[in-house]
Image 1 (cartoon, chains in turn blue, cyan):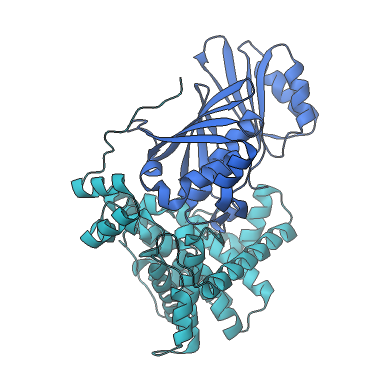
Image 2 (image 1 turned 90 degrees about the horizontal axis):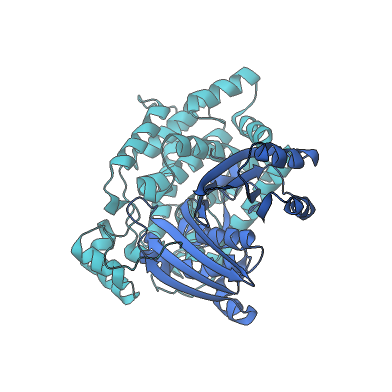
Length: 222
Length: 309
């Protein structure tokens, strides 16, 4: 679905909505899933991202996103210097994710404390993105809605219990996607909501013994 | 959401709303934002557009590639030669936004960064000339937005999807619809303005030199702005176009999907692949791109595998 402000925008630092704004959004979502700025990031650039990314500031924009900057933040221009200053180490390389992958794809392996997460995403034009995979689980996140990502026991009633806990707080669930092909007995759920899920709700969900891992992905263009 | 011009017009007539109100109403309905919040966000878009134009005109510094920067200021300083002041100013403004964009400045990607110069060039130049107050400009942006939504749904607004016709072509169609509507054009005249704009840009490829959003993009934004105003002028005079606008948009989508991938933002064809274009890419350090251009291939080779473990 195309919304009015997909067309009248995004408000962004140039030069390319796909190679700069979209790249920044990918980095931003990655740090949001990780729970903050990574200390170290390995970023594989596929296709057009690798080929024409240099002139579009793709690497600078991804670095800026990993620092927690949004696509319209003018600090993006100086992201490399800021990364050095704040202790974010980013390594880029060219990768081939195969002919099926979107030409503007990137695969991230990020580290923060004891956490390590791998995420694959792509920039699909006009600054819009899709997150396709988290830790080997297939997902489909757009970043245009806030979302929570949960790894839980794959037992009957899990989805209902999680959406119930969200609904109790008066939050409206927009989409739910469940993937259990990744790891046998566990399921990965991406739940997009109409408003940001407060961190305390996440804290409460995290206390449930059948939830193993949970992340808050705040809305990008709020 | 509106998926065709026919639906947009019908919905507006059925509810007794003008085209801008219909877009505003649907946005409010779909996002839950208040009408005032939608309008404020558009006023912010207009502020960023003005700022990007002013910055582009004032800054003489070149972009990191040296391909753009300072050109818009030069055009404006040279003054009008062939037509009036407004014509030259409009061209300079279109180029100025792309120059700001190339320097990693703040812009509104309307509908994309590569076509961001068209809508501001047309609207900000005509607004004082035609004495449109700010509130009418906000309405004009809603009409431009509605037009862009339909094109994005039926065809494409991305160069990678449908070539430059989808980027500067969509931007020009948006500007043309907005101007025609603001000048009191009927639904038929808005439809004709969009159809005329798109038919004049059908088949335009996306061939950015060295893969950069600079050349020919900056100049294509200027010519797209001219096309937008020319189409509005003809539509407002009551000239007709025999192919319905939705069918014209569908043709643009069809042409885009059949366009060779070399002509869809990959920098492997068109002006980008000329000997001069390759030289510029080599100077900009895009060695991998130049190798592919020389090979005339679109397949990436020799790159390492790297996947999630």
